[in-house]
Amino acid sequence: MGGATSLPTTTPPSAPSPAAAASPAATTATAATTAGRPMTDEQRATFERDGYLVVPGALRRDEVERHARALDLVHGDAERLDRLAPDGSLQLLGAVKHCPPLADLLDHPAVFPLIWSVLGWNVHVCHSHLNVHPPLDPDRPRPARWRWHQDGSRQCLDLETDPPPRLSVFVGWWLSDVSEPGRGNLTLIPGSHRTKWLPGPPDPTTPWPAPEGAVELTARPGDAVMFDRRLWHTKSDNYSDVVRKVVFLGYTFRWVTIRDDVGGITEQPWYAALGPVARQLLGEGATPDDGTGDHQWGHRPDEVPLYTTLRDQGLLDPTNRLHRRFVP
Image (cartoon, rainbow, N blue to C red; front, top):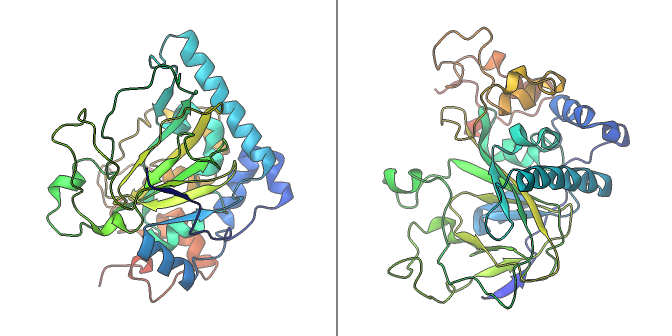
């Protein structure tokens, strides 16, 4: 399956302060008021060329340990309720709702500036999931299955342009060591975000070679990977002795419907501790709700927390059309 790679890499745009590590709520509140540094020209060129960036060391060791423990608790609960897959794995959509400590990642200052640099201020998290994959039994290899895909579901079919529009960007937060291939690594084709269709087998169960140029991305615990939803990707099977733990957060424009189940989260006790930007990212709109979509359409930017944060810190880029206040 191609080679292994850990490039291109980038340094975190802004490192969290030690004080922000005191609690998950403190980290989120800091990120909500300190937007960080925007993406550099070099980072943007790399992202546009390859469709992804690796941010090494985006999480400190204590953050990795805290979030890994949170995933262990969720996995343990699912096991007790008999909700794991037959192989003992768990992929759970709505990452923050089902594992509130992960709210720290929504606007984490090590990566979030890359998101608003690419997508602008009118964004939210549309799709997220946490993954725990124990090692597979090498004596019982899983049947071949073609799993290569782009994210976005119907967006991949309904939109007519070639290449299709970006629309969303995902971040994978690695909590386990995938510094070697074969550990459930994110596997991708650099530059394939400009390709609308990938030739494959006649059906997903037909054995088929990996696409030309496919690489298993290597990363260490605490590394983050930001990638364009159009990038063709899959994951390698995990036949190592490492339990694969990763969290994926997908960001898109607020006029795109959220796929995640976010019902009832505003009533949860942990929600009140979130900063306004984090609440925006979880779908909070006009207060009070006026029954229209104007807020999500960006018609009232002065009521959108990320817009006001970037404005007040002088981070709105006049050359970036997605940073404009109104559509001209």
